Length: 289
Image (cartoon, rainbow, N blue to C red; front, side):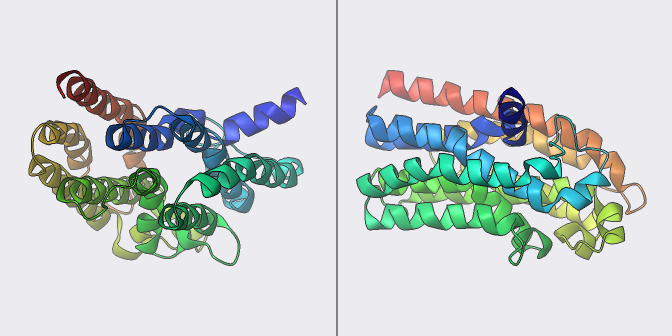
């Protein structure tokens, strides 16, 4: 049992838990002002079960390609042995079900529709027969939905208008951030993916064009936030480090694509900086409103 829990823990990518739970929790609290069970149970769902579902399905269906990926087996992903595959899928489904049932019962039909949509994209990204991760451009958009989805769902659950200018600006900026992050992450695997006949945005347009696409998406995200009104505009400074890191690989080639891994590793920790900036703004907003 200890080993089973350990496998589930590492498969769920604990370093990424905050990237899905935080957007839901902070958005729902800011809009609704509520600290009730919807906030805590929703945040808990997006903290662990959601990530176990997302990465567990990925590790099961990507096992063959992960065997050839030297980045797997550490911070950047678990190498899940076949004997754990069935257990992982069952555990991820069973752990998610009670949360989804509760959120369905307390939410409106619109909010529940968004919730189910984003759970579907989590499954569709890796599951056999769907494999959105192998459909260029859709791969980046689907990956972005995994992180902006909890935010959109929180807006709907809180009963806010998704077309409100400030809310829509944040959603669009966050989506562009997610698209850029996925695209840049795909650069390091261009050669390996082509050798394995795996399609991605980077295998289609090449490493250099993908880096430049990611740079422009980060820039657009920063500019959108900058024009979203005070004090949210201050969060645009979080885009600067991403632009600096991606910009260093402006002239990368398909042959040198693996050098982008150095930048990708920095992203893992840079996300915490971005969260810190947003947290300071939230604290300031809470104190002054």
